[in-house]
Length: 321
Ligand SMILES: C[S@@+](CC[C@H](N)C(=O)[O-])C[C@H]1O[C@@H](n2cnc3c(N)ncnc32)[C@H](O)[C@@H]1O
Image (cartoon, rainbow, N blue to C red; front, side, top):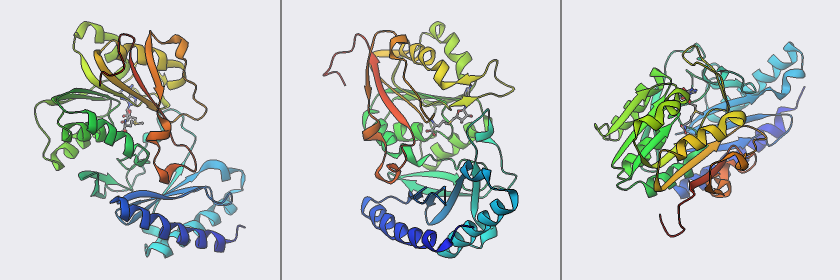
């Protein structure tokens, strides 16, 4: 059985360090622990003072009893540090992403609350789903999108709870279209826009399978100046015709998205599949620049959570924004 003392000490030290860092940056949602100790393969994020714990499946070689005792120990240690009763602690087991597992409900009742990021407001729920509603590792990417959004048209593919859309709208985007398969998440996007006074007719939400939509997109004739393509690693649901595998499908998705980009437009492509390789050879002529070093924030540097690229059309010339 692992000794909880080093874990408790490390957590307390990290909490002090990252809380100071976050205060200086005016950030209230951040990561304080990311598998620092091999015996404790968990990630702990703070959402406005409340902890959210994700355990990785690495420990599943332990027998059930040992694993349960370990989970209790982690719960107690984190609960004690934050003054949260262990039963009320948001504690998720994150399996390797397969199918739709990432979006499963936990069976817990809704417990939404509002957090601030970049001067904007977002609804999060630490208990209801495996994910919270706000992916903290893209904090910087969202700020980049806001900085470029003025008077531009945004297409947000796989929009989830619309955090990129909210940032773009706040940055003065002329219009946006956010696509997601899930009504639950589209409603959440609507609420996030509303929380920021940005639920306006020019910010359209459409519930659809992005793969089907991209298939039809050449016929739509619409063009966008900013596209965010941040797909799940894998996806499959009853509403989808086919499965999605970002490793297999990304050239097709990027090529389709490039077809929708205005000549001077910018496409942000990101994903968090482990071991992902960008098949540049399969892309239509374009400019590709990896910007992962700029997009991964300091509090996520221990384990790179995503990779991110800026992609522009082949006709794009440096100097154009
Ligand atoms: C990884 S999240 C995207 C994260 C988002 N870009 C953000 O930064 O908040 C994946 C989202 O893709 C949606 N999704 C999965 N498969 C889809 C599909 N085929 N078409 C549309 N949305 C899909 C899910 O409902 C979920 O909201």
